[in-house]
Length: 80
Length: 420
Image 1 (cartoon, chains in turn blue, red):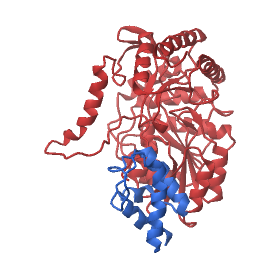
Image 2 (tube, helix red, strand yellow):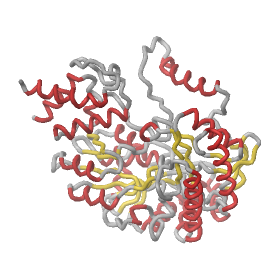
Image 3 (tube, rainbow over the protein chains, first blue to last red):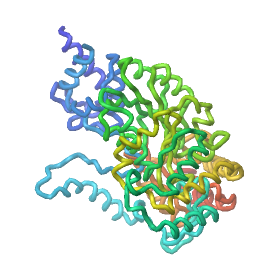
Image 4 (cartoon, one colour):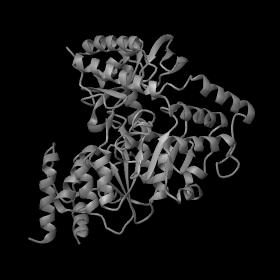
């Protein structure tokens, strides 16, 4: 398993508790459009991802992240 | 993940964008429809109340009916104080109705300087800067203090003016779970050590009326080398030995670098300010766009503010009465079985938590028809998607008025099934 696959699997596992509609997850799944998350859910999810990977995803960065694949890229970059 | 965080005290004016066609206003269609649906149920529009007459800090006439005001931020009841009114009238006659200019150009009059002196005296600090509103004070301080490559760390439940201050500036924005010292510590620990950091806190959070554990949070901020700004809008006048706010009550006067406040709550007029002991504080005036590029407050407004602030320094009886009123209302509502925002009367805000919008609006209207005005608050302004009836107390509320308020809450609460 590559690093990126591992990151994606971890992200998907973190999404599950918030995936009320049981949307099938791919890299193209969007947080607002497909998962229909409101700002409070996003906040909780981001905090969970930050703690899982021991990183900070600033609100500035969050504004650029719309789907699962983009989040995986951001996490990979932040873990350096 | 395009989301804007909580927007306290505002309607959601940032709905999901739709195809604009040619009419830019079409993006508001969903918002217009939602409001219309609410009004079509036959209720009074909670966001279109008009005060036809204001009789005192605690009484107004709304839709021809005498109404007890329990949803203003007139905590210390200064709006009709004779000395405050006299100071305003005198300034109005001597200096005219407005300044027609920026503080930086022709808009600084005698009374702007006097209001800043009154603030220095009240807070016991070397520096005070008056802004045109409290919103502008947060907007200006946060966007000016923290630059590119530096960090603002804010509580998730922060007021809209704090979020907007972050958006206005160029800093990196990091937020932590509401009032969580551990979460703040963890996040600060992950940021680059050498980068400049500002932790923004509020003494009292206005939606639920809960108080921040400032002592622990400030200790954590200092441990990580961050500066601290505390917004004390909802605490001025009645926390701490000198009424300076929650930060004074928790013994943090030497540790909080900047205190932001407002004239529109305990002071009883309009305006905002920041106070600080920082030796270079005056430089803010030279760099802060929301200070420079807007008109200064009218002379009568700053004169009333200065008079009011000086009276608040010794308003011990009012402070005691305000706390007694908070205990009476909080205790009464709790005994009836309402779910409240705080376990104890920790502030001058008592928030009644309801199940949904329909229950909240129905009860809000029943209270209004019963002669009691409270604030209705709904998502996204509220934490965790709650619907609130928010009561804020005034030092001028009489125990008999609060008895009437409690009776109205009992009747309205039983009618909607919020209490048994």
